[in-house]
Image (cartoon, rainbow, N blue to C red; front, side, top):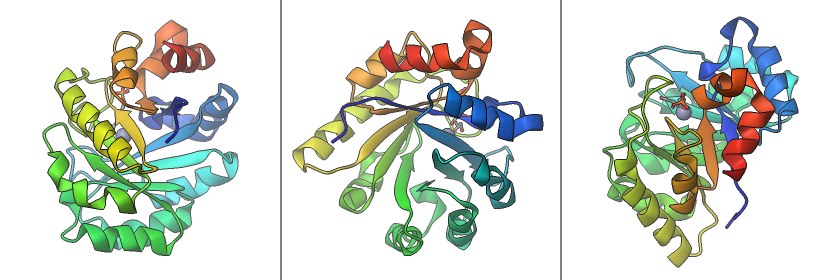
Length: 220
Ligand code: DX5
Ligand code: ZN
């Protein structure tokens, strides 16, 4: 189980008119992963980017593309996202009628598998798959938009997931995503997260000093 904290900046808050440059800046600023929020206007009430854009961004950096699929149905797009250069493919269990099948599909393309829980989604939705995946993404906002307020009511669920993963000695990363800032990041890490996603805090705080903001989230 990783004890070091990884930072996965969400490019949803980046300047979309120069995404390649923004990703390069994140790499130079010390990002561990690049969090790419994919939204289809169906699973969530917003639309962002798809595999064609990720394919163009892939050559910019070797950093892990942590792709968060907020799309449904998800199965028909796994191949496209895998071939576009995603490294971790995270989906929502509500976006498939067979979680095992989606996991197998992602594995077929030798990608890491993540499963995401919305704030009100129960651990029981994913508990039986924890030994088959690489990452759990606990959402601390309702999916769909950056800049929302952190929902502290997810902390007990985060602690419970951490406990289950430790008891079963599973090598699964715990990523938390949504509304994370310098005031709440400590409690998120203490509750069990080892990967922190942040968009607005990293891109907006300290006049957009990416390096400083990444370091503050990692060390706070
Ligand atoms: C929301 C996305 C999050 C969001 C995080 O649906 O999954 O990754 O972009 O952005 P902030 O850190 O601004 O909440
Ligand atoms: Zn996300």
